[in-house]
Image 1 (cartoon, rainbow, N blue to C red):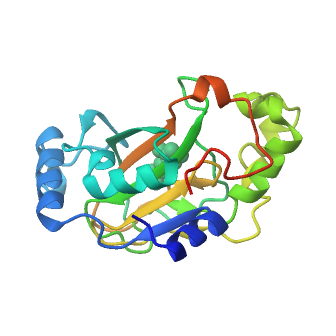
Image 2 (cartoon, rainbow, N blue to C red):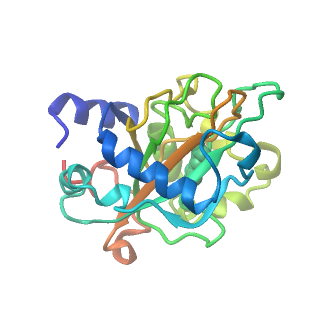
Amino acid sequence: MLDADQITHFKQHGYVILRGFIDNDLLQNWRDQFWGHVSAQADDPATWPDDYVVKEFSVDPAFGHLPQMQSIIEQLGGGMFSGGGGSMLVQWPKPDADWQAPTQGHIDGYGPGGWSGGFMLGATTYLEQVEAGGGGFFYWPDSHLPVQEYFRRHPQQIDGSFTKRDDWEEKKWALFSDDATCPPQEFIGAAGDVILWHYFMCHTGSPNVNQRPRLAVFSRWHRSDREQMKWDIPEDFWKYWGM
Ligand SMILES: O=C(O)CCC(=O)C(=O)O
Ligand SMILES: [Fe+2]
């Protein structure tokens, strides 16, 4: 469960970081599963693949189904969030590249499969320590608030039709992340540290110029009644939440 300060932080900033959330035995087990799946050796870069998306794989037991995560999901979603999973995205090292901070961050829920609505929450963890410049998850603190305001003004665009705006090609996701009032932050963390993020918080990946791969595990949750609520952009920001 999150305590009152963590909930306040999440509501105010659109994210909360939970250090040391996953125990070391399970992290080791997940690392073994991952390296086995990609048929490579953790300590031999010559064997490493180069794919960002780890196809047909999720950690087992799923990240989103750990008991300590389930109790938070119950608390934040009031029993109405479903999802979970434990898919992985890897930023393999490019030590010779120039590191640059990402200039824009997206919101999730508008992927190749289109918009299904009701997306509420994401969670990201790492299987190994991620240092600065090491391909960390980048996020724009507080950006959930202006994004919510955007959709209050343009509720019909929640289905992703903001990409049909005349200026979309020019702006892309800066349409949202440029409204953020704080500069983006890099999620630097140890294996098993977790960031929970609100569905309207802008975020993106970043380049990895370090020596170790950035091994990230993701879970996402949507409202189980999304067909009923997916067009509603409520004035009460927390209407569809349990806290
Ligand atoms: O790789 C990352 O850190 C970001 C991934 C992301 O934004 C996503 O999967 O939606
Ligand atoms: Fe994303």
